[in-house]
Image 1 (tube, rainbow, N blue to C red):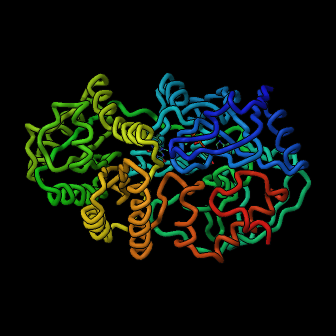
Image 2 (tube, rainbow, N blue to C red):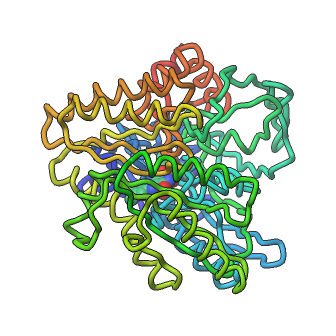
Image 3 (tube, rainbow, N blue to C red):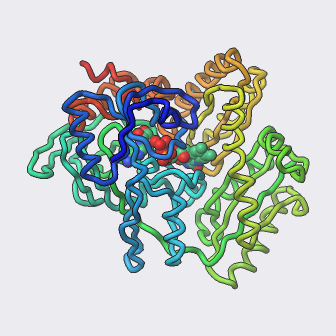
Length: 487
Ligand SMILES: Cc1cc2nc3c(=O)[nH]c(=O)nc-3n(C[C@H](O)[C@H](O)[C@H](O)COP(=O)(O)OP(=O)(O)OC[C@H]3O[C@@H](n4cnc5c(N)ncnc54)[C@H](O)[C@@H]3O)c2cc1C
């Protein structure tokens, strides 16, 4: 195992893409499960706060330590098994999504739910319950996790298979490795939208779901077994540019109504507002003049379907009032890669911009119910106008889930942006939405979670953590404040 004690040698582990800067005095990079387990046990015995680190692509400071030690899973990076018949893959926590997809593709398979960032580790993805553009059709990574192997702070290794341990209403009672566990789950109700805000809880829930979205606070994920699916015959991608926002919003509404006719139902529906297009224009001078754009991706199951699909989308787009001549379409892998790069460029460019101005991320990860989206959308616009701060608004419009990003250039703008973000949060909660649809809470969004669920429910989360991490060393200050653990 690599152990580093000189902070200058591991500064990059003290941050993530939120630009929050942390501190720690030790870095452990274990080579295998036993070494991970030993680090957890030793840290628990010596009460050393331990922050688990994956690829650091998180946007909420979740992997940023505030003190103590960092445990990096980067060397647990083996793909242990790929079973084509069962369509499953077993990957250690430090395997990147990119590698999982590459290996799956070699067998004609694919992982249906992946966040946009291919360098994220599967341990980080499961721990944040990430979901990507395809979650419009396929949901979050939660839907594809079959089994998790984890190291606990008491030195035990747990393996939980989906479907093996369930709660009775909000109570768990089970035994693992000869130890009995009996505890109550928090009593809050999760909003009925895509959400990764706080621990996943539900009546009669599967135990495995508690560890998906835990943000490194309950256990250290060692290995994950994922469900794969047959790779589609082909994909058809398009970007439709609109000269009026209303037309784009209507276009999305019509897509949502396609649910019943599933073969045309796209897996990706993404939005770029006017500012996003302008932000990208220096890199893509050929972007047509437009008020906004919708990016969609459609799976194709056969050659025959490919022709049908093309005609279908042409007609669908023309009915929306957008000009086909202005659209970008991709039917081949090379064309698709170009569109993919275009889509992926935006969050990366935002992160680079913030780094350039040394500002932290002031962005939303809000999702609201279908019938409340218009209200939320126009509220974004109203506040943005008032703020006079640069911004871009883009993302997963199919799930009423946009990433509104302020682009502050100095501390004053950053300070003001925080206030405006709070207005968005309050509005989203009032509309029955979530404050985090996919990025999690980490350290940056804790105050918002308290507004969403209230202090009592945060205390219930802290009580739950104390059962599974009795030494209270893992992922401190993620999701809720560490002072709640003292009560
Ligand atoms: C350009 C860009 C695009 C993105 N697009 C998306 C998107 O489409 N959808 C989305 O959901 N997110 C997206 N993200 C956010 C980010 O990629 C995800 O949150 C991802 O899941 C983080 O993975 P990571 O490996 O970088 O984890 P890290 O940032 O290193 O860690 C995240 C959290 O997981 C915990 N953790 C890590 N490994 C383990 C483990 N083995 N056991 C227990 N806990 C662990 C950490 O302690 C921390 O709390 C994007 C980020 C960027 C920069």
